[in-house]
Image (cartoon, rainbow, N blue to C red; front, side, top):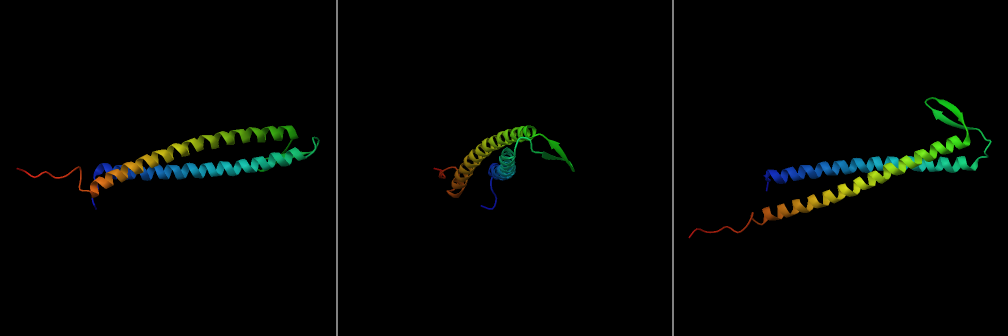
Length: 126
């Protein structure tokens, strides 16, 4: 079984590519989830401060004074965007997992046929 049919080799390469893509999607999703937690913590903390308190945000290498409402609105907008990205990546992740599962089943069937001696029993001439 050292030499696989080209179609099976192509399926194996496609499976590897799908797995790589799935890993990439999961990494990006984790990054967005981590940022979302930070944004939620920031919203929680800013909501605790009095309305007339000074709130600063980082812009490049500067701190800029903003109102509490401005800060909250920016954070809530960012939170909404992150949730949308996470939802999209979750759908991609599900689709990729389904494609991987289907391709694995296809590969396993092809390997089973190879191990059982090919397409069918050999006929003897008569």
